[in-house]
Image (cartoon, rainbow, N blue to C red; front, side):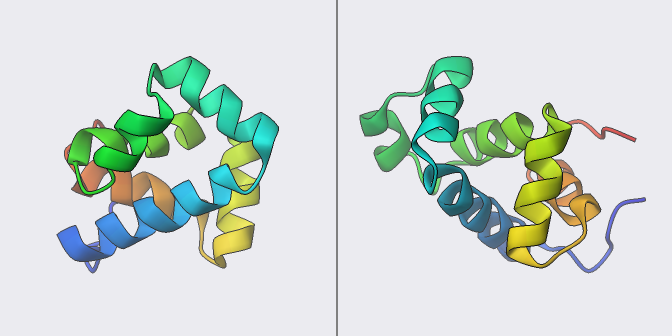
Length: 94
């Protein structure tokens, strides 16, 4: 179910918080860059771009253990991260 209270700003905030969590671990950060094709420069330059935010949320959505750990660290339900992905224009994983 998509969170009807998750607007564009909330989705962007969720994506940026998720990115911060991903980058808190060197191995996970390297895996993000490897799997998404992003570079440190493109990541920095594209922080406010929906495509970069979607890439981060996809990265989490496609690896359940990271999704659950990120949700725990962000003190939210995993569904909020998925809802943020959908709110930013991504496909629904339900």
